[in-house]
Amino acid sequence: MKEELLHNRSMVRKLSAGFLAAALGVTAVFTPVAEGAGGGNPNGAGTTAPAEQTGAEEEFSPVLSDEKPAVADVPVNNMPNRIITTINGDTTSGMAFNWYTTDLFEDAKVWVSKSGNFDDTLEFDAEASEVTSSYGERDENGNYIFGEVKEDKEGEPVEDENGEPVINGYYTDAQAHGDEWMSGDYGHMELTDVTEYSYKAQAADLEPNSTYSYKVGSESGEVSEIGTFKTSGEAGDPFKFVHYTDTQNAFWNENVRNEASFGANTLMNALETAGDADFVLHTGDVVETAEVEDEWVDLFEQSRPYFMQSAMAVASGNHDEYALNYGDEPLTEKFNEHVNVPAANDEIDGGSYYSFDYNGVHFVTLNTNDNKESEDNPEGKAIGEEQMQWIREDVEAARENGAEWIVLNYHKPLYSKSYHSLQDEDVQKVREELTALIDELDIDLALQGHDHVISRTHSLTHVPTEENFSNAEVEDVETFVGEDGVEYMEDPDGTVYVLPNTGGTKEYDDVYSKGLDHLHEVRPDLDWMTQEDMDHYNSLFGFGGQPQETDAFADSHSNNRDSSTQNFAIYEVEGDEMVVSMYQLGGDFMLGEERTVELVDQFGIQKDAE
Image (cartoon, rainbow, N blue to C red; front, side, top):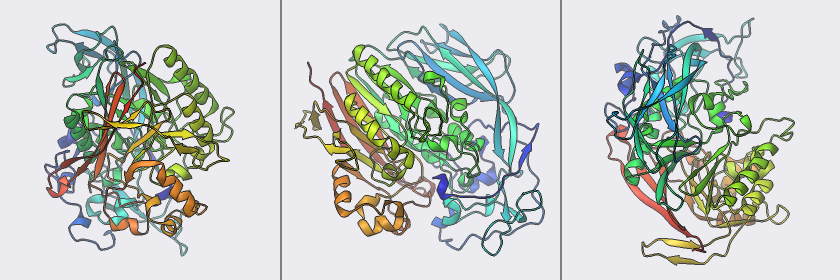
């Protein structure tokens, strides 16, 4: 979390007429020096082991230079980049697109073809928005430039008469290594502001249940490679989708142990395992620090081959609005600048909330960044009153339109095996109200993120806070084993809450399974929990834990952003049956290890055919 980084150093912002840092493909993102330091593609080609995994465990103490290294211009890139295809509106006949360029191209558009040969091309104009993106300063080799801040006797940063940090000297991440660095103790960095253009386009009047090819760009400029997406069919038609979360790549590790490559590798393996997924669902924290554009570039470009072979449905996470400096105002527009999704009630606030239907299943995407105190939300709940009312009206309308399945997806969890679920104040303020509404609306599944552990509850029904702090009890549901060997819940009334760990490298521990003393030590704010509370909370889960093995969890809830264990889930829906399968990836491709894919949990739900 941002709170755990606490880089309380002033950022010096430099306005530049420089150029857009966007690179087409991994080889363009990483210079030879940077790639040798650990950057590389999702399969691990051209990567090296991080220093802390090769025996270099000494404390990070960089050699400083008195003069700041020359800051390289942010390079121009007018090849469409940061491309993402997103669900927006009627999934039977439309699709949305988002991309960036350095310069403005007024003839920007998307070309769509059902044949794949573009002999039947449909053209749709794009709307360009001028945006300001902030890039970390780098040297000529692509390494980030940092300053070591002078500290007083109390360890507080020293500032000059202008309120700027006093710098002892400079260094780059070419020297970086060690657990403290990996976890975020990276020093002071300046940002360069760059004007660029974000494009949004929507295809319409497409045929249902069809696979389309597409390209984005402009006739007066560059055109992208070809991507693909699928439109939905009729209610009851079988389909499947992938769920992953918290890719959350940190810029300071880009050239040390590249986290975006793990997010890309997770998605690659998820799509390969699913075989023919109709779309991908991401439950938030796409990046670590929304203000640092380098992270968006890195994540989108490393994942580019996979973003371009499937439509995405994305929920916003808290990190997707974070500024570089802790305490600065959030950048509430950043998520929607990068992702072309609807905004119900025209509300964009660190993301947006919206819904869509796919083959008769109704998906409801919430925005848990709706937590700023306002007239609508005086207590600063994760979800304000206007959004809460929208949820009710939206789901009730979907039921009236014949939706048999309702799937909720959002970032901050109500139930997980790590601490956020019971500690985030904005979530606790809305827990009773939201779980009661979920129960009342008969939500089938709630797909979550934020807590970097794997977990899946039993079917849960709501209870008021006066009866139990968790607002849940396990429903007594009949089960049976189907012909496919999967154990199905038979027509449950409750809701199953699913969280497939993380697609990135940052992991949290299963703090509720290591004893009460350990919980109170690593999360003092949960010292109110008794053994009875812990036993009850653990009883809500049918599966869960922390897959990564690391000494870091001995005295912390968090790792050192060094995990090579990621997870994803695949959901298969056919008529009145749904099967949920969670998979685990292992093997550190940066060390040349083979990646493995293992099925770790599976369950099904069968609805009453009537």
